[in-house]
Length: 352
Image (tube, one colour):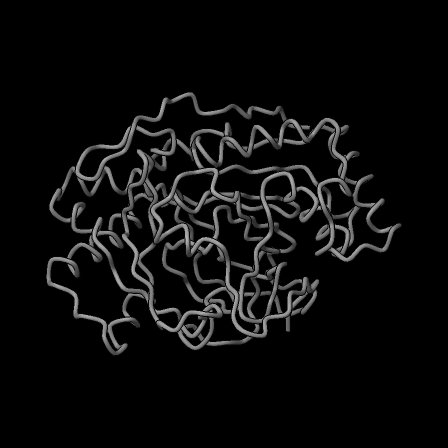
């Protein structure tokens, strides 16, 4: 087994303020990631045995994945490690990998249960779509990008954030070619834009309209939300991605047109984010976690395997820390998943 080089980032975060450079442990560049494996925690045989035993206990009891709690999934040794990883996500570099689970020893239902069980140590699972999926599936089902959410297609996806504190991915199968997972430090992105064009960095601290794409919670009526791209609250920084939802909002009644400066700022965000993105190779069995408030993510276009059982398939969780990291209210309100009238929560083991 490879040596475990996991180590916490020791940079001290300084209070964040719009228009000033950020000093933050989540400020990293591609070379910092590609040249290091300090962000990868490699499980020991004893820790793997703990996960497999806890998973077997879930299976023996016949528990539905969605009903697994932390008490149902005892991890005497690994639990302390997960607490460390959780802190690193909240107030450290903002991403982490757990490597070592062997899918030759776990079925898909067992792997899904293990993924959920480990997730209970990091946060509380959230609903990911109007269909009530608590366990999501990143898998091409033949939809066209723009007509369906990007994770249901094989298309390239722009760097973006999800509606949660932590995004969690579990790699069940990789694509035949492509489908590379990409991440970017939104802290480094802010600092880089501030260095090159301070006026655009400040402009991105203003409020931008985003379409809700029909996912409107009960009791609310507006088809859009307003959020800063670069947000600041109680000395903490939090970023949102620049996605198609901003362009779609421009077509909604009551949404004012963007200024030329705002459009220029959004384009610079897109361009510099691609410069700062780094590929994160996912191996079968890997569990990958990131903090949406300081880390953007995407993936490249891919070609899939022809066999249905080999298709690229990542399991996904959206996790909430219930406010442990201070957030601007406009971002906090839209970091608690998706819920619409009539939603019934489910945790499917696959998607069609």
